[in-house]
Length: 144
Image 1 (cartoon, one colour):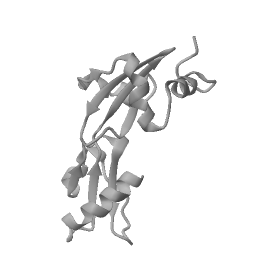
Image 2 (cartoon, one colour):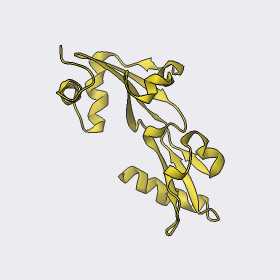
Image 3 (cartoon, one colour):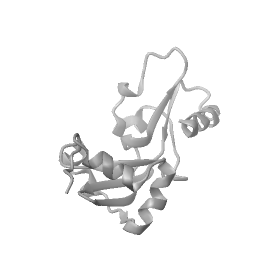
């Protein structure tokens, strides 16, 4: 949130006549999970929802939900920040990403398993925490 607020403040002067603009942090990771395994791939995909924001002037009756994410760039000015990975987006059998084949269109570079702890520490988590989330009583992936 800190990064988004800073970006919004610094970007607003670029659009002095617009009541709204979008900020797209399009660089991140696609993750697939299986029991005791994490497949993490680097991706860059514009106007994908994991790290897409819209900024509206005070008093606006619009929200980001007023716009289709894949058409946001046609409805308002926007900036794209790819300076660092901002999201981890999971793919699994019961979310819309898998159903629509969104991950099959990606040609990501897979992060070697031994590098994953260094990559995810920037997101305030660990491999053990991720495994716990994905293998608890409510998880999609059953514990092995």
